[in-house]
Amino acid sequence: MLQRTPVLMRVTEEISPESGKHKFDALNELHDRPAPHENLYAYTIAQFRGYAFIDGAKFHGRCAMASYKLTATQPTDAEMRDDTLWHNWCVKNDPRKK
Image (cartoon, rainbow, N blue to C red):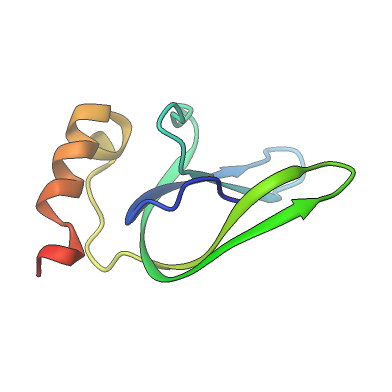
């Protein structure tokens, strides 16, 4: 449930050493940062469908409805972990400019 829908977004993958289960998280908020042990992937927005309002027991508010696809050319790990490098990579690889 995303509040923001950036054109390019980092997604983290955390693998539990005990169970081997995979946990994914979208770093869509400006203050989101990856943890050192998480794997990182870049995704590009494929389609924005608008917003929905959810009034539930665990969540109350507006959520974006969008789909993303794995970005064909992935940035380096260093670019994904550093805010300035990530920003520069996004500007350089913005699909709206192509």
